[in-house]
Length: 332
Image (tube, rainbow, N blue to C red; front, side, top):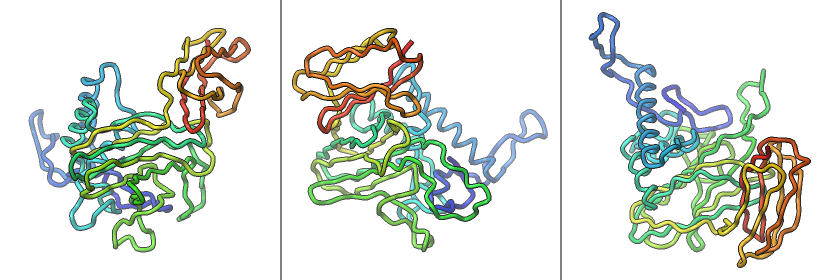
């Protein structure tokens, strides 16, 4: 996630992700127990970033007892709030998304707890589109950052300087308002010196869309994917940061859905709300293999017999029209 060596990768991924001050930093020295010295290098920048992230995790846990942010959430958060260098807007191959701004990251955590910003950990089902709305009550800049931990790809041993994308699951982030569509940043491999451009990002696991000085109004944020996911779902984190912002809801979620018991021994019950049309239940093992499917009716209790399934963690997907819900279930 760090720090000083210049990027990008062969396929154009933005590297480094984040930077920190590593020049003439006062640090400990080996002369005696209280000695200090001014030192420079990544050995100075790395502990600064590490310490800041530990404090951010502590702040998050204080507001959300018993939990820590996932690594993808931390990465999305610090890339969303980084201080950009003024000479080259957007990410670049020298400083990544910019200088770590721990205060700005902490403020997003606080505002998210108060539903003023978004700090979301969820997942995208294969073939699904997750949609969110945010409303600006006054003009402001919107920064939306998507990050996910991609499954392991195919080894490229003995293949050097290949520009082919290494992504396994290629998620996409967009912001729309009316007929306007805002795309994420990406590096231009053909001309790195000219800075980042905006368009369809085919290589990064961090996608950030900026709407600078956005007028007041409602904006739609969508998370989709290309092709077919290698697993039934892909976990992701989404950070949306703006002043004067109120959050809408995920238009594609199924609220009022009940799934019980979890963990399950012999049976899993699923009940759709009365106001949702009939749908389908699918059960996947953790290799992404579908092991069960049945049609379900709204309002009724629909039961899945699990006695013949091996013990383990499964993904239960409920689909109804354009709406989906995916939940991890444990079969004992």
